[in-house]
Image (tube, rainbow, N blue to C red):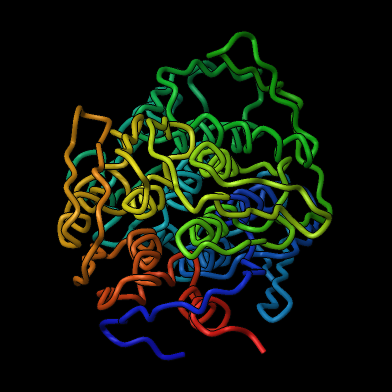
Length: 439
């Protein structure tokens, strides 16, 4: 399906949904770096292929890692060298260059990897990524021994980074603007030759950190928790190469589960289960609190709409799964009372200012909404009308605000192709399996 500059969402047929979504972006990009840090060949299955993951794979290839990809089978093989980087110089004899695009995970994870590795590297990014937070991670790396020279704005891309050896084996990292800073240090902690102690300030996004720790354990590295905010990784820690299957992307699944109460139809996303690693699974509990019913089945979780068709309002803290703030905002306009979304101040610093994106687009649909405090918004539900959705080059804005268009005339998504970042065939699946009844 060829997307134009604008995509008008069509009203959906009312039929039960059974959807399959790609592999998790968060798990894919963690697995790619962990595989590169292993000693030997790892085979990854159900890999998400998107702008972000392709950018990550290309960066690993530029660093000299043998990478084999089979997009048709969603499979990647990566050969690691026990933490060593094969390309210490590029083809012209200078520093290797790595491009991280707009991928937050690639930007943070690769920066930590290269900043803790011997040698010098240049890292650059898209214009969008230049605006996103990096300072906390870069300052932590400087404290550990990295030398960084910035080409434009201090503590933003592009920059050159090198390390002649670790100065310290203890660091404090502030995660209030991104938990990826902590995950980045944890994943590359195997590069230390002494025990590494990480102290954490803030509590944002710790569900993603738990995911990181669980994945590290599956590849043979244990993270010890000295207390709630202190992590210890042994100097002997080393990843073991092997085969690894990536879970379905719960962030992607959430858009389809959100359609359940809006369309009033049962919805199942295949292979999604309550014990998955991803924090966004908590979004289903929010929908349950709003009146939906959950049932764990062999094929995946089945969500059914409220019995009386009424979606309830309430106050919901999304601090540990904030990617779903946009989704919840889009669904909240159909609730029977006000919805307050809290714990989301940090989403101002993601692909766009997502709080502003929510306020702009809900107002465009005629929905009264306001920011209450720095980290919360309140939505006053009422019947929406058509409008053009400003996506701000943000894939999650485009996907979330397509949902009202399934029951509202003239909802038009501007720049729908921004979904290539994580879910390039989202609108194709929307048309084939939601708008049009399969078969």
